[in-house]
Length: 241
Image (cartoon, rainbow, N blue to C red; front, side):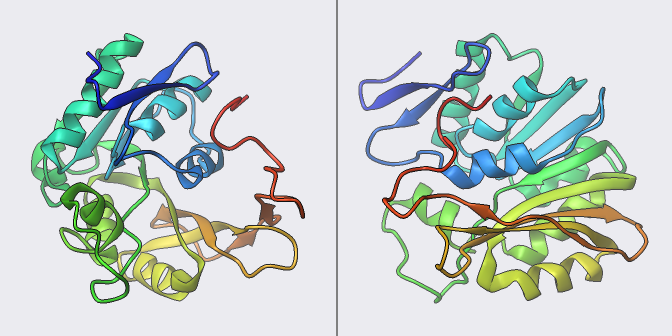
């Protein structure tokens, strides 16, 4: 179930673990922040797009009472790793991993299929940074296979009316994110800004939008990741509860 070039990380959450590539595809604190930020109703059906290792579905399942989660990942080797994570945790009947393009989610699941969609998308514009030569990492970090417009459009295509889209993105693309949400009638409702530490510029945003929601954005308290000595102010990778 676990290959020699992989490792298993204990999430300290109901005994759940995640399989990661030692030298390549690993989850980051942004995935944990998004999982904590997402407010999901009991019994909700959730779609996680660009799921990577499957970390977000595992955390969402552990922290909420959901009816089921579907997870979509484009890269076959990464989707296989996510599926083995579900097998390892005994979650294969609750979290279903699909190796497919997010542009196909409406065909896969039908319109208005989900109460909520989560996504930790590629952050970098093509040409907006050095592209990693390892394909899986390049696709995860750069808008090669999908861009922000694709993510929001595809999420909207499968959300129920008043369904929620939860996303983490770079703070310097906040205007792009809000503009794209509104382009597809997903009204921004909650926003939290993430800072590396006090006195530093923001690095990430966490945003919730409602499909067909009324205009009113609540800006929540800032999140600081490190203290002045570089130590986590909250354990973002382990000890999640």
